Length: 342
Image (cartoon, rainbow, N blue to C red; front, top):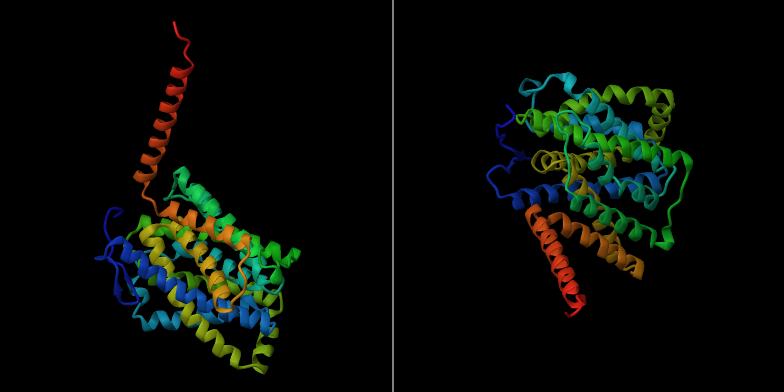
């Protein structure tokens, strides 16, 4: 079962028969579109309207996902995995989404972005401990991830007008969501690896259904459900924003699952981190903000990280070998020069 090849589709677009670069480009474009819209909507709802109902909004959007999945033609009869497969996955998925949305009530966007940009490192580390995966990465991929993370943090901190605003509650929330994120991508990859016949729609459907049960306790215990209901009753247009955001995020979610299935959790985490850099850069281009030396340094590190990640393993190994040979030759030449004449 493990060696079988599954036909992959992204919202009706066939991915299986395309070259790897086209698969990567299509999935990345879908992801970038979905989460750029998601970021704009979240910024408006949380910062402009001051609505901080992360659990309730995730709950509402989960039902919109189910409607969209039904429109795509998926039914439970098409499932190839038992429901229990998705319990852990659903718990970390809903926990991560709820805490990420809710943390914006305590942190401003640059502060949250700074924490979330480190996601790729815990994803790579956690991958070594997930049953059915046990993934190991070459040293240059860890270096690539570090360059990307440091570059993005530098770029974020360079914005003096919107410097990170920290709150203990917000930091705890975003750190817990980061831990959950590190398990999320790897659990998804493990399911795709163990059973290649698993479709993206099945994974999204099952994790959403099971995840809804995990959202109810925090909504009720915090009293958020009544507060959110009353606030949205007074501002009903918020539901329109949530629907629009959910549709865009649905495209992003399916694209992310396609990336995980085709390229693995670590590569997907690199793409999601790079998306944050593109979002920031676009905001500077659109609103013509001045770029400082720190911005440029951050962009250079991000570019180095992305380029290093894109290099095939054999090219990196060849480069490493050439460097070692060059150093060895240089050392031999120095010894020859310093050898005393007889």
